[in-house]
Image 1: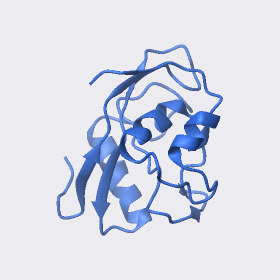
Image 2 (image 1 turned 90 degrees about the horizontal axis):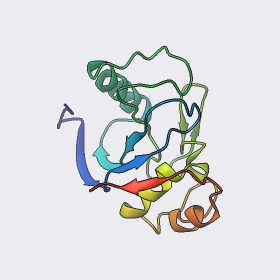
Image 3 (image 1 turned 45 degrees about the vertical axis):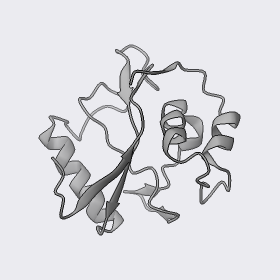
Length: 137
């Protein structure tokens, strides 16, 4: 699915089943964090992600938090900080979402959030999200 000339996988977290965040009247989600290496700049990477999501059946114009077959987010891009209307890096809600922090902990517990200055392990300890995050694999 990924063009190895553009993006190559480095590592992946375990897969977790998580309660839906936002609109609770839907089935649980499967979540995973995957670390990739790329020469693409952030906006080029975003376009590649949209191409992949569309190929997997995602409609990009949908209600916020609506069910979807796939949702790929750029959580971090090394320690880069980017804030535009179209793209925010790091993802602005990482510290509030256990379904992101728990799989991130598998890969990079000591990675320091470039804006908040705290490690992933510290952010998880401070996270007030009480949704269930259950490891499947």
